Image (cartoon, rainbow, N blue to C red; front, side, top):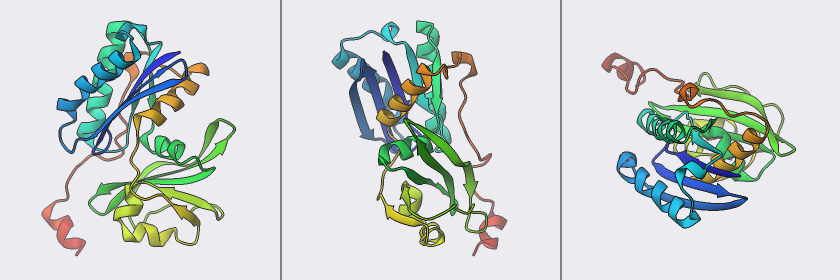
Length: 226
């Protein structure tokens, strides 16, 4: 199958094209330049794979949680391409992409959500799929969900940047991956398996996974956290 995936939920701008099992990838640290870099990256992977957009069987995107702007860009670009090609879309949680990248069996994934909070989820591998142990959620030091049992792998920027998160799961985590961010290659692999199981949706139903309704603390909230 042919599938094009986009992941822009963090500062990493990532595009991958899966062509009959072969993966073509373009990546760049974008900071706030996703909208500038993304379309040229899509063009390059299509050129490298010698495919046109309408040759895709489906399109996929990292739906978040993460940067509000980033996940809106990924969703919007994929929706536009899918509408034009009359193809379905496969949304993939960005935290699940982190778990897939780890190649471990039990993974706690966390992204820095700023404001001293983290986006957190936990997954356990089940064959070539994943069981959701902790659904994606926004958490702070007082609302972290417990991890069942030991021997977890930890991954994502949340563990890199938030000491309270590392401390909270110290007894449960056996190993930690430093600095990894969700990548389109993992989104593509997950989406291809979901597509094969009938997990694609019409383009108009694709939507970001936000988990938060604001991007900054008020002055009173900042003072209360000191």
